[in-house]
Length: 104
Image (tube, rainbow, N blue to C red):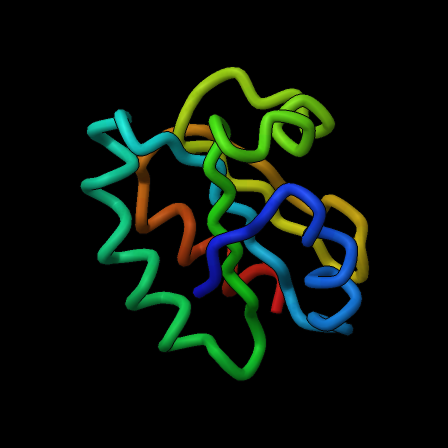
């Protein structure tokens, strides 16, 4: 689990290689984001061999949020080899895990 910086996305995606990348677009003021955060940390540990979880603060990384057209938080974007394979909004930990399982 890593917090992403504005200019760090490309290097993190290339570092991930063939692993599934989960972009967690969140805001520090977002209640549901805070609620799902511990579960996301747990999933990042559980699937560490196959998944890279990157937390993207929409207020700190506005350009990345705009590139992915993020309009609500939390939004989860799933990338495989740099290509988006899934995306959804809402603090649904079960759906995050199900999506991870589907794409690893």
